[in-house]
Image (cartoon, rainbow, N blue to C red):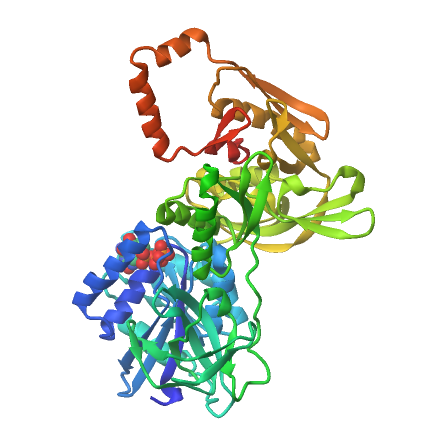
Length: 598
Ligand code: GTP
């Protein structure tokens, strides 16, 4: 088809508003996937991915569609990841489109993620088509929600489409709107090749499979390509389109979407956002907007068993093939031995990596509490960035510590405004803005230290709003605060992975709560264990774990001792998640205690 009959679009929606269901429906209606395949193939895939705890991804699909005007169109649906941690990926996917369907659940309304994604779409000048989904539900209030979209986003909703992805209502209207409202790509086939990478994954047979949109020029099978940011060159082995299964083609032109493989060894060599050009006739400038996704949250990963260090290294190496944003480097801790300091885009990313390491590589790991990157200005005029509280330079050398701040936008029913303000205030939040939307819904904006958000802020927001509030955050820069390092001593020795950086005014409270929590979490031993929280040499709180009493011991080990021992050994083979620090066995939960102080 000519470029004028191509439409590239994505679907933006808050989680659970029906994006996947609508995508499935579009694939079915255009005959891209038959009803039978739909069930067998797509649902199966989903289950597998759910099981493995990975975000469900459609990536991209090419649909052939005959319009009501009798013309044949190619509609490329480009998927966007749903979570804030991956907002950079969202932005690159949107950059590959000319339009977006904005799907809003007509029984709910605009949520924080809807909003964040709409702003990204507007930044890329996309044509936005509002779709009110789930109108089959008795609680659907399309008029109220239209009003909300107009009010909050300023988008004209007079011709918004009323749809039910579940019941198949409004689907042909959506397809026609894509054809009529989304502009076709610019015809730049004559220009030097530039293709935008919007996704990639690692395939153990073919190497990295890259998903891209050709912005200018033409790409052919066998071409020698150059990645403009990584400056690496490869020869294309396989070129194709996604319909949505991979189908090989010989060439792709400006405006088209496809995939390629070229014996690329790791996704980090073909990063999302990078520009593909021809090695023989390169473009002068890459496509705008490339930045490397930078980790914001760091934690230590240690094998409970020192012998598993090499296994952990191998597992991280393998994971990294498929995850360009994962960073790691070896770390030695006096308390924990050898492990790795790992960097993640956000908390969800961190959880996915941990989960995969344990499940897919069968490792028994201790993870330490997440930390952000602090900027420390030293008296000698230099600056250092630290991602590990135990590396904080001495107070005598420091001039000031700065910490990253984020703007948090929450959308909530009015009745929870109070509890959410309280929560934000208790996390050192600075109030910025509050707006009443339609019918008792409110947006609330705070500036907060990222360190306070990466703990349990999201969970607290959910529980204080009974699940009704949603949030989004983005980095706004560094700010100086009177921060101090709080050390935890077990049995008189500082345990570096338990060190945290806290606000001076909260240090006493956090120290006290932390030792109390540790007292609960660390099991009794045969000796008394003193626990202390200290700033420098000043102890701010102390507790102790009493020794097991003799008769308790007797009971515990009474009877058939050899049987008990066998039982214990058996248990030890399962995941023990205990780390011996000196003579004290410390369980995984203790390393996360700082997240659970409320
Ligand atoms: P994530 O993939 O988790 O981000 O969610 P999503 O936005 O893709 O939503 P999904 O398509 O998984 O739909 C969420 C839930 O809403 C599912 O239980 C769907 O069956 C249901 N759903 C989707 N569309 C409709 C609709 O039009 N009507 C009704 N009643 N339910 C729907």
